[in-house]
Length: 238
Image (cartoon, rainbow, N blue to C red; front, side, top):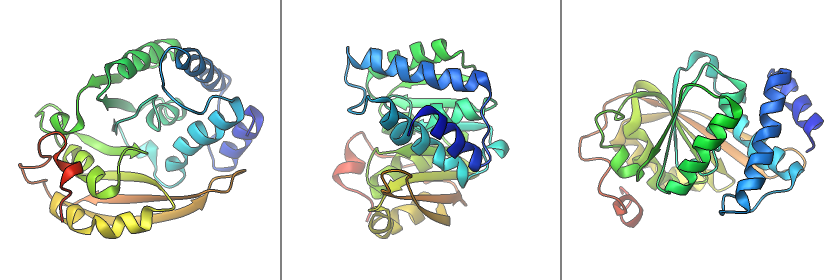
C-alpha cells in the first residue's frame, strides 16, 4: 500500500487527511526507519508495509469506534506508537497516554511526538500492572486499547482496570481472536466489562484476517486487579 492508496483507502472509510496530516505520516515513517537502525522498534521497515501493516491497521479501529465522541485514550504497550499515534494524527483532539515497559521506546515516542508536533500526549515508562494500580490512571480513561501485546485473557487484566465506568476497552486481534475471547470469558466478566460488538474484516492487499472487539465497562474493577507484574501472564484469570 503506497501513500496514495493509503489516503484513498482512508477516504473510502470517511477519513480525509489534510496536507498537514499526510506530512505527519510521512515524518512518522521516516523517523521510525531512522530510529530503527539504532534500536529494534519493528521488523517492518519498507514503506508500503509500514503504511499497510502499521498505519492503516492501527487506524482500522476508527472504522468501528467513533473516536469523535472519545476524549481520553490509553494505549497499553504501544511499542513504536501503534495503534494510538496513527489514530491521534487522524483525530487531533484526542488526549493520548501511552504506557510501555521499555524506556528506550518511551524516548523514541517523546522524540516522535515532538517531530510530529502533537499535543496532549503523555508517555509513561511503567509495567502495565503497576500502571493499572496507580490512582492517577486507574479507571481514568474513556477508551483503552492495545495491539499485538498479549492474548486476551492476559490483556484484559492489563487494560480493563484503566477504563472508567461507562468507557470502552477495544481489543485489536488477528484471526485467533475468537479462540482468545472464549478463553478470556471469565476474566472479562470478573474485571467488569461485557462484549458490545465484534467486527471481522480483512486487511487490504495481503488479505489477512482481523477482528476488533469492543467491550463496555459496566462495573468497577475489583481492587486486587491487576495483580503483581508477571502474574497475569503466568496465571490468567480462569
